[in-house]
Length: 447
Image (cartoon, rainbow, N blue to C red; front, side):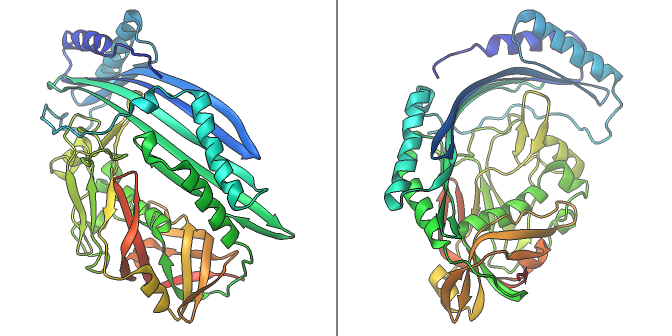
């Protein structure tokens, strides 16, 4: 993964052409990315793939009308054609009353540790050996599983030029790995998964991923049904991640400020007990969601999103910030095809005072939820999900795993019913942190 492609020359050519075309605003975004992926299915490696993506995107504004065009070629004639199309579209577009402009230049502090040479130079053969280490570690715990999983490593460089004077280049690497073993014992099935992701290969312990996945899968043998009812649940960090992610998406960008999400009307309002605090920080060195700038060239910064249970801010790009009449929070996301949205970076939930063990021991009857998707409908806030992995709690003790158990309701009711937050948790990719969370009352549907 050592190829070096010139991004600055086509970006500067596009900017020169646009400067001569009497546009009110414009930006040019050029991206080169390469990824290697290894897929696992059945007893071992299924496939190995290498993918390169290259593109130049132009956004041009005239009288508040937006024209967008992109090309997957950086040849001079294709750059010219892309600029011409964007300008034609902008001149024909209807004015957008919400558009206020695009950001100007700002100096960001460097964020170190975002690019790993080992990933850039990794071969498919070397990646395959790393995946085999996950499988071998799982096999040492128990032989004979069927597997699903794999790993992906990526490298990307981007170059952004705007009519307002922004000129930035960024590069980053990433690696993710997961494995899901499934064991059979007669008619009984035990299945689970484990994962990790990071900026550098050295941070991923492939053997630990395999071992932990196998151990968790074996714990799922002997699952039983649980009767329907309203009970407390305890989310372990991986389930907390899903729980928090739904809220973060609902307070991001245009949808939030245009009243299109379940959280839109709760800015400045209490949604949870005072023990809940959430920050978003895109400046953490070496963290998987960090970068010096966002997708519009605005410096990243630490943002307190929820304080003492109250939503303090939405996550903005310049467009949604203009609608709300506030400054952008530096959360723009973009691709070269013209999409510019907004979303979280490294999300961290403030630890509480309890331990997970204390939460369990103080629960007369409830469910420990170790794997469930708790992303609600973004408009209504309602959700209904299977608890893919969990355990019945009785008499303050973790009992047998549960099966065919559903959890549902309104996500903001779950937030209001937060009772305890653990003092320990899981750090993911150096930037994310999720503790365990106890919720006092949740509707469960079993059989």
